[in-house]
Structures are given as C-alpha cells and as structure tokens.
Length: 424
Image (cartoon, rainbow, N blue to C red):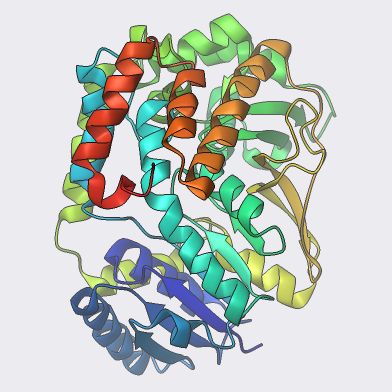
C-alpha cells in the first residue's frame, strides 16, 4: 500500500538511517514515497546519497525525495515523523542540566523533568508547533508521530494548540519492561500479560499476570525485584522506589529520577555521568550508513512506528504496549488535557487508548505533581509568557527556592536568548 512518509529531522544519522531501515523492512509499505526533510542541507545530502545507493544496491521499490523546503515535503503526506532538536543538542542539554545545579537545585539529567526539562520544552516546542501548523494547513489528515523529547510536554502542547491533528508520541523506554519483568521472574515473556502506563519516562508496571494460570504475578515481582536490582548500582533509584512505593518503575535512574525531588539523594550519579558521556560519544561518532540501515531492517521493536502504520493500513486490530496520546479517561487519576503513556489498540480508524486499572495512591500523587508543570509549560510556550514559565518552575517539585528559580530563569533567558527570547 503506497504512502507518502515524511521524515522530519532526517539529517540525523541515527534517526534517519534507522527509520529508513525499518521502512525498508516492511512489505506493506513497498512502493511508498519517502521524503527526507532537514534544515541541515549538508547532512541531508549525505543521508540522501547513501540511502539512494542502498535502495539501488538492494533493488528496493521505494521513491526517495530529499528537501529543505517543509511546505514542499508535506504535500500529500500520509505520515509525518518528527524527530528534531534545536541548536547544538549537547551544549544546550548541558546548560539545562548543570546551570540549575549551579543555583543549588538538585536535579538529575536535565532532559525531560525538573527545570532542565522545562527549558528543553520551552526551547523545542515552538519549533515543533511551527511544523504542526504547516501540517494542519497542508496535510491535515496525516498521522503525526513525535519521537522528540520531552515527549509528554511536546504532545500535550501540540494537542492543546492543534486539537484536531492526529499526533502520537512514541518512546522505546516503556518497552524495557518486556525484558526486565521476565528476567526478574526467570520465565519467558510469552507466559506473561503485563500493562504499564503513566507519563513518558515516568511510567510504572501496573499489572502483571501469568498467562498459563491467570495468577497475579506482581507479588512475586516485588519479592524478587530487590535481589535483581541489588547488584546494579545504576538502578539504585529503582531499588528504593520498589521498597517505598511497592511498584516497579519502567525506567532506570537517569530518566525516572528527573521527576522526583528526593531522587538526587539515592541515584547512582557516577552511572548517570558514565551513561551520558557514553551516549554523547556514541551519537557524535562517525556512523556507517549501511550498518544503521541494516540494523533498522533487522530489529523488530524500535519505536514500533512502522508496525503501527502497517496495522492502520491493513486494519490488523492489534494492541500496542505503550503510546503517548491525550488522556481521554484512560488514567482516571490525571486530567484529560495531559498526554499520557498507555497501551492502545490500533486499526484502520487509528489509535485508541486502553482504560487503565487504578494506580496506587502514592504513585498517583507523584503523577499529579506533574500535571500542573505540564499545564503551565504548555501555556508558557503558546502565550510566550515569562511569568508562566516562572510559575512552571515554581510548581515543579524539584525546584526548592523562589529566589533560585527567578535567578535561574533570568540566566537561562540570557544564555539561551536565541531560543527563549520569545518569552516576555
């Protein structure tokens, strides 16, 4: 079934090549047109040249177009995939992370939660809204997949600004439970039925049952998980969270801890630094296009974007483990304006979330703490309000001082004026 798929941010080698490889794996999408879009013309030409060579070498039935013109790229699009960053990713990330700590605000990682997550949101969301404005004007019926972070804040703001767009956020993080839970129980995943949800990078395993007996597996998971995590210092926070809240987080220290003011006391800081340095080094290292394309054609999980497209095209009626969509009553403990991470069913009509069982009260309280932060961040972006940006900082549980927040905001508005100058 031929479609027009636009990859926005395709000059990024990791995103571009791996996603192209996943598309080339699909039998359903054979004959489709793939549009590579990026503002970096040099990087775009590199991805275009190596991909065309790969298509020819493997005799693949795909049409490839590359352009820096967004309006041209979006003409007749069926699917748009957004994976962008704004400015120098790592220089800005390190500012988001380290400058709040210089002011004495004990945050972790600074990408998705805490003040770093707010500044990341304030910087990237306006550019994504510009993309979505063009999508609404040019190809309003297209399905939009967002892969950029901070996932839940981006998706929440898009749906507030453009409520009629079909936008789905996808992240690999929650899928880690598919490996972690069987390892804890020493059984194959095929004998487990599990559900997970919450907010992106802040989700938990909600239910778990053995398929052969129907028995609740969660008590045994909680019993065995401490032993499983005890010798893994990078999961110190997971170990503590299980002990304190009696639930299993979907992710490890580096992301889950961004939303918790007390996480700074218990995480493995050396492990976080080691991971960041490894990740930065890996993504900035030269890549071999053919290896990444081959990786995309062989790996079956990834972001699950291509299987979702296939399921919509073929009306396969399947269930996805975790997607980020507006909360239409799926999580009763959270407001409907918020984009939540939940299981979903997929068919030709699109994606429909699955209503979740009640969340444990302690964890639900932590989720509610984030609702106001997301609300104010979205409003600050849409209105360009510095006052609301400050309020977003002050309702974030990680921020511990009014004066520190005020000074931090002024500093970031100066240092990142190119990106945050719209806040008045």
